[in-house]
Image 1 (cartoon, one colour):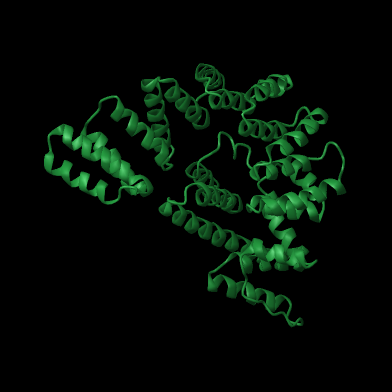
Image 2 (cartoon, helix red, strand yellow):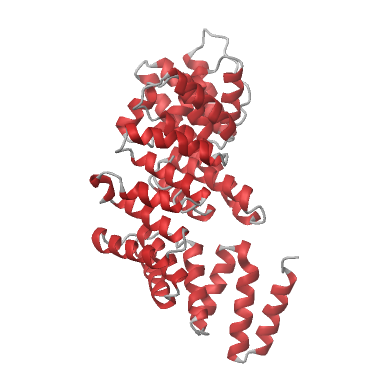
Length: 411
């Protein structure tokens, strides 16, 4: 799982933006994983956000097709180098990933040409993960599992990839299940993997605890990780997942104690600083959170991750002007590097401008753009537009947007 994939309970929109970053880097497997996490969270916690869910489904499909095309090209290169076994694995994965009949036909043709003496029949593929689990449950499908696991591992640091490849099939099945949102299956497979690999320095307990956190089994996850950190005091992932378990049980003091007792090389780094600030924030200790994030942005320089955390801490603490300025700075940074501004950031900036008394054409334009970019929240945007027009004395437009808001008001 990503380094900050759970930090502060990322919104589906934030996970979507992580996927966009990976997609632009042509890391299509990682993009697909982030989009799928966003979809799972949106469907579970925000089922009313139908536009977001539809958009994520489209982006998952786009990532799968891009990944399939990449695998097809790589498979052709492997065929040229006579590496037929690996090429076949990639071509099978293409058939499972893609819904594009042209891509599937090309993959089938390559398979047929490569294995012309085999009576190879390629059935229409189902969803990759469901297919993998079906084969695993019947004692087969190791090649499918290995291929999909390799896609997931490709986003990890090289030393972690090497370690994870040594853990065997139970771990692979559990890790695939974890990253596909099948947390019950993930926990079962990862528990089996822990029994198979009881070494105290393996990272299997961290992945198992992550699955348990998603199953709301926080005490069990904390118990596993507390033992793990004793043997692995320099494991950043261990601190991250254990903090989340403490957050969800309200044990903020334990989380603070854990972070402050971490080794100096971790304690002075940005990830642990962010965990510390987030813990203070979730505990409602906003001055402490502001202090941590201000020091982080001074020491590590301006970046969006720190700035977002500091802005929300300012806002919760009541420093509205500082929060508004920081959200505005994030928006400027997004425009300068050519990325789309997250509608959440734009929405917070617009609302803080509104709360500060601004009623202007500029603010109207912001809300009009948000209606297009974030249609799940257009009710509240229409309300804001109505109020701005009313304050300007434009009664006709005020009535118009009041009627539009009333027509879609939550029942």
